[in-house]
Length: 307
Image (cartoon, rainbow, N blue to C red):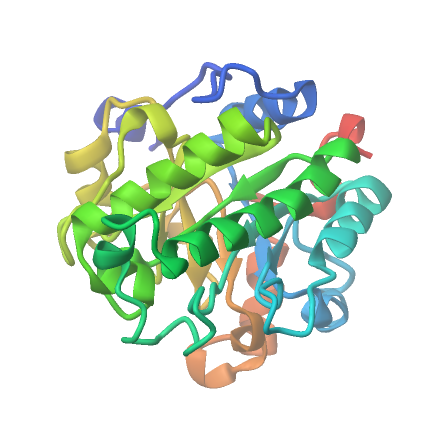
């Protein structure tokens, strides 16, 4: 029962954000997320190329949250148009947008999995070319986020995702370097670029891969990628009572709404192609069942003030 759940789980209800200068649109989005938390779960999908598949499979349902990526923004890449897509999704369709960033090596000598970019050494030497390249890339993404802010589009911002797994370069140098980079990004985006349209999100694997949490003062939302049965309990142990929301930043199989009472995640975001993969458990029947469950919030269920 929900009453039993509430007795065991601490829910955040105040619309406060770590950035006290947050825009009215961002405060309104956070307030809405607070109002839903513990009551229903928002549906989400990464990459809008799968939107028509979802709509057809579910009988007309569409995800409340669409996931985008700033991969492509660096000088050696071909560019990125996801800010424009996100504006159309939020302003034209009334949806919610989240962004991650598959950040290639700032030195352009590898992708996001590279071993060549040594984050700890780079951060220790602000005069190095690597550090200057890192700051350059941060500023490029900041300029994209400014476009969204000027359009009055709030973003669930999930940078340096899955760092604790140590497969991306921003995690390979360990906790101290990664959290220093996260806090550097926060300071530069908020204080230098005056970006006030971000709900700051940290991807945590609880204690399973090492808890690198960067601090209550720079995190609004904590998300797990690809949950297991202990994920929710682990979050309650580590982060319960901190006033943070808990979500699923990436998922393979759509989560079972029948588990919502035990694990009431704020939202799920199915990773791109996995929505079409029955081997992940996403059969047409399953997708339709989840999207049509009354505990799941879809695009058409979002409040009209966002449209």
